[in-house]
Image (tube, rainbow, N blue to C red; front, side, top):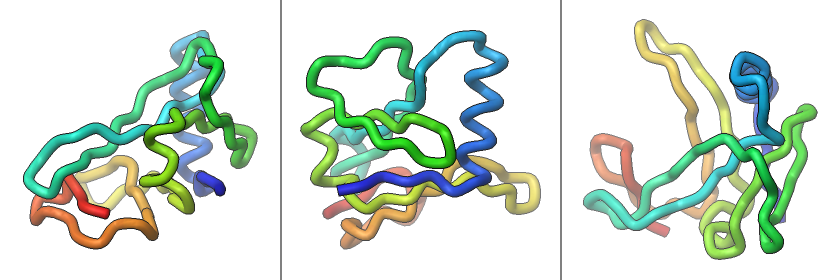
Length: 107
């Protein structure tokens, strides 16, 4: 089981953590939402929980809760700028379908 960041994503997260002045990494999870059933959630982590799974990629800790891990296993998180848009892009091999707006997915 593994979760990875691209170099661009790691640089972006490192920059945010530096500006923020605290934090041990980035929490990646899923929640029930949207027309396809599940949506990603991202937040900074200040403390690790007892059940958290921690992966390190390009020097950044990626923290996953045990319930989200089966849906995210093998995911690569990228950060991209495309024209005027920029943001995180999830390359998740478990996704079977996603909604047209790209906000939610189904496994």
